[in-house]
Image (cartoon, rainbow, N blue to C red; front, side, top):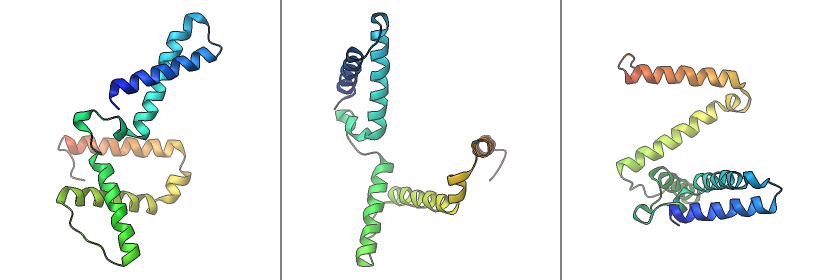
Length: 140
């Protein structure tokens, strides 16, 4: 499905929702296009590979690495060993996925129960650290 196909379908869905709803005549077009954008955004987020252009119809590297990693882990589980013949970029993507999962697991309590203001403070702190790294002011 192309981007235009998706946009047309979402707009049609948006208009059908508005027509069956109780929306004032002067606001139907705005309401329909708003709903269409929400539907389109949801679809692109949920299954982005289904809406790529014909020229770029491929799974994103991160999604492909995740699929390969899951297959590799399943093979390890089932057979005790697995073929490990991935290129460097795939290996790095798989490593990054596992590192993120490990961090998330080690900080499970934080993910489950940290108050929003604590999370916001950590985001701010890490964003500041990134800015400093990018400007060459810190090595962490």
